[in-house]
Length: 125
Image 1: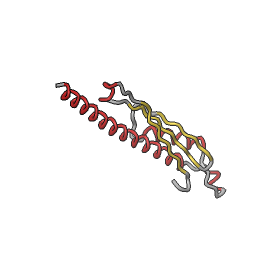
Image 2: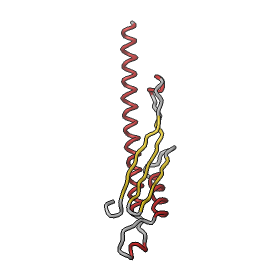
Image 3: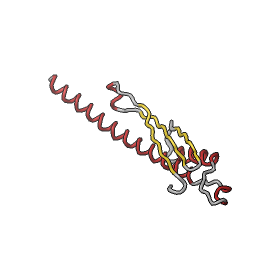
Image 4: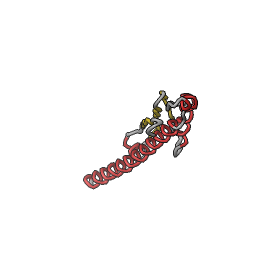
């Protein structure tokens, strides 16, 4: 009887690990998608005055706002936060998404925070 109980408990833990790892991968993919979407949206905001001079430079204020908003709206999830840094030729976005375990929480394994970053340039996307 103890051996059967140990096998069943081990099976439940392995199942919990598999489900939580699959869910972690799903949340990670969504965070990466959101960071990519934010960086690409921010990189599309070109400074008009620089464009008239023939230069491809970003409008820093507008690119920052658009990048953060796009990252938060791309497959929106509760608890997600986004930050952006804008240089004249590049936008970088970092997305933070909380992750909580489900079945492994019973074994004392909690969640954490998933981070994903992406950068884009106006000339390259």
